[in-house]
Length: 494
Image (cartoon, rainbow, N blue to C red):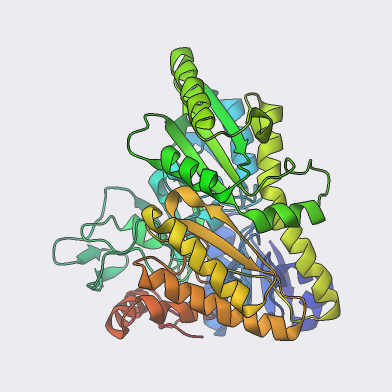
């Protein structure tokens, strides 16, 4: 096991562990370790407890909420834990296995299967995606990570090992669950049901499985060392499309047709990019083709068909939609084979990458600059008004920004791109306003990225003091010393 001790030594030899995709500055720690297996991880966690060192869990460092960045204490990175094996119909993947590595393993060992959760970063690790209940574009049809997890291997605070299997332990009607290794857990009673897509606070549903408390808990309840997942059968056909309407009316009409209950297509993803995204990509083209001339916005779609007849039906229905809305064929990119599909996915992913590059350029002049992005979601039926209100808030603040995201689930990312300290302060205020807007519409302040260090204070917008105290009580039952993830607070502040 690699281990480095001392703040100066860590900054000199492995400063990358103090940075993630959020570009948040100021993180530090005095001890860091990279165990290669669960046994080494348990030993290190025990050592940290004996030394009184609070512990931050780190993985692929692809997060954008600064959840894996320490504020002192120790860091345990799962990036070297790479075990992958078949266990009957399940795949056991240790926490450091990346999404890309898992896909390669499935292609080699279970042809005809795939793992549906697809966060933008293919270097995201299985431990990190389970800790945040990551989703991605395909969650419109397939749901987020927890839907595909059958077992979790964990190390609880203090170094105790735990194996949780779905269906083995659950919360009874009185909201309690007794586990022999943990004790009695009691869920707080919420005043409102949590939104369907939600990563703000603990997952709390009457009758829920115990395993689901740990999925999405952002490392606050323990270290996930291995995830047992159930792959899905790969459909016979997958079609990727990038549709570039030239007017806003056609965009929203197409969105309604694609997400309406009357259509019978297996729509897997409905992503949107607005006109400011189109302009930003033209200004930062990179290696990808520009959007078609006159494109006002984009809908990025993925639709699957189980056989040739179903594919023919899908294509006929799509042609009819485009014709009805006067969307010209030369404003539609079609992806029917892997290279074309990759081109469309790369186009979608190029936007956040370009935003990150712009932030990095400003950061060289102003080191405190970092990206600020909203992660709220509302009911899809409210998406148009939600988008309009978000845009108005950011325009009023005079900020550079783009808006994109998982439109099919009412889930938008408004990325403010501050270029100077005064814009950073204005962007922070705007993110608070967008979070409050999301809650006012019955939605969530965080739909997939978690809270991390940047958004813990948003919890108080969404939950009452009693609800937050109930979450903290759950945490204290499992981690009475508060040793795991001290920078993340479920009391709505740092």
